[in-house]
Image (cartoon, rainbow, N blue to C red):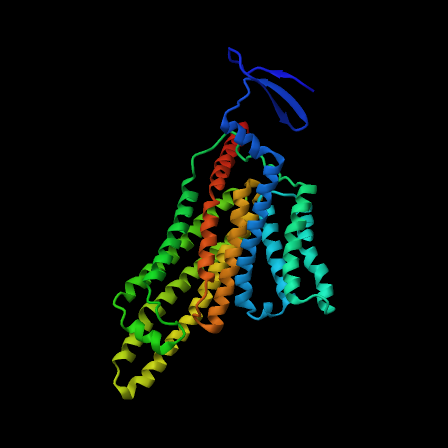
Length: 411
């Protein structure tokens, strides 16, 4: 079918054809500028395939890194065998890809199909490996090669498109709601202060080597105010989650989830204050007393300092776990509000991952003390990403308020 469309302007211009779906429209004054050519190229099927393939690959790599860090903390020897490593990596990459597909709005059937394609190569190659025909190195190599190849073939054969979610407030963009803006600022600002506090805190010695680390702490001259800064950073993050809960309730989130998040946040900030009191005041006095004690008293003073340190392990473990629960409650509420757009879904996914990582880290502190770990920094990065996914909630709040006003006026 061919139709002629005019632009509503005078003059003549070059003729050009534009393909829309399966219909060709011949248009006057077709834009032949380089920018238009680039736009047409990006809309072509090969370009869309390439972009989707890169998105899937990056999400797989991110999933492997994030979940791999969790496995290393929870089950350090899990990937010692090639078959266990293959299954673990396939699971991590598939889960990362499936999460990103959900964020992008793909149908559940598409996610299940792609996940099956991702896991199939490893499941097939495990049989010859267990029979002793295929070595472990070949299992991992050919499993990954087949995974990426099958993913490309399947995407070319069955191109998936994300679902288009209609905007909650079709009237157009709305001004940012002050509560949600404040929540985002508190989350990001608290995270920044936490990073600054970690840098300023003495950290040259291994934290579980008590003689060395107590000596380092005893020589610190800014110990108290650094811990005041750390308390402020954690309190700002908790306040951000409390304010976020109010916004989530206004846009239809589960009141039960919001109340559970508020309760976890209240317990978290209380335990943070206790942790800073133990670490920032009691431990400092204990190590100073040990460092200044005469030789005959040093053993007893050191034992007292260790007791304070072990108390810090316990309080830190529980406040980290409760902070993870707070994050998980907010993330669960946002996962149930996925109809508000891909950014809200991304916030829910990253918040869930951050909460799980905090839970794992808190359990690790309780069991092993302050061993060096990247998990707290990963969790911080994840809830910063979550904070940047909050603006759509502002538009939803305004849209909900407008609907309530219209309903009241109609009544």
